Length: 194
Image 1 (cartoon, rainbow, N blue to C red):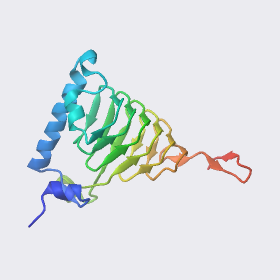
Image 2: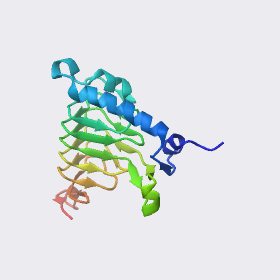
Image 3: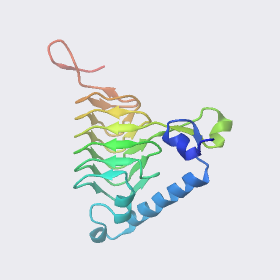
Image 4: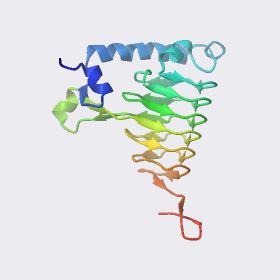
């Protein structure tokens, strides 16, 4: 039996995002995001009720500021005390995990979809979904972009405006485009730059 586009997406295969089942899932997410973004703050609280129900998992004391956007929601897993500041975008075509105590600054973007380099396939909506994992107590500065397939380990810091294209080690501080570690240690334990 042939797999659906959703099944292909969920198993990490190439799939077409131009698909009625995936469109329905995106509309559900848009409804939940719309409610979250437009409820009066006192009614919304830390997380709108439809968005809370949509997400894959939500720990205690999670706060997502409005305006927020996610593609599917069901692939987003948030640990305790995660904070997403205004304007964050999570394109969760694959699993996105954000560990406890991690904080995202304004306008942070997390992408899981990698589009085909073939223009014909790209026009037909072909993409592949790669998971993003963010450990515990990570700080991601405003307007940083996390690319598909990246893992950011516990305690790392991502500088504002950085584009993270590869994995980040625990406790590292990375900045720039592409993001590079500025905390490399020399033989005397001194921080050195590359």
